Image (cartoon, rainbow, N blue to C red; front, side, top):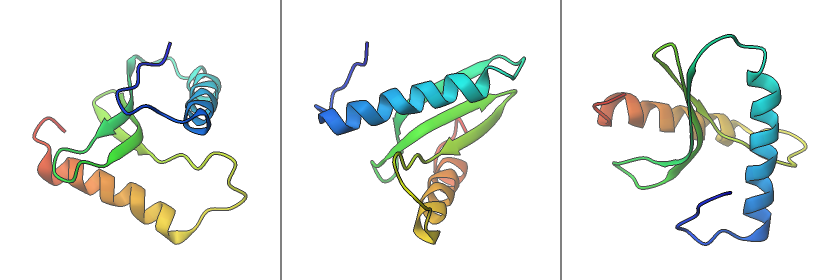
Length: 93
């Protein structure tokens, strides 16, 4: 069950279901323990990271573009900005 304080649209819920399916498939090959955090709010700017993975003490920031046919430079920049915000403005990271 998805708990959502932001009242997600049907499209958003479908995107989350796709993200979960993709992550299950891709992460199943790892023999590591870790954490998956969906829609993590970046403290300094209040935007939300699609998925934050913590594996072996390494923080991975994932920005999903479900149903996109290609990726744009702004998509990469968005993920890098989130990672930098966590690095410099989030003590726990």
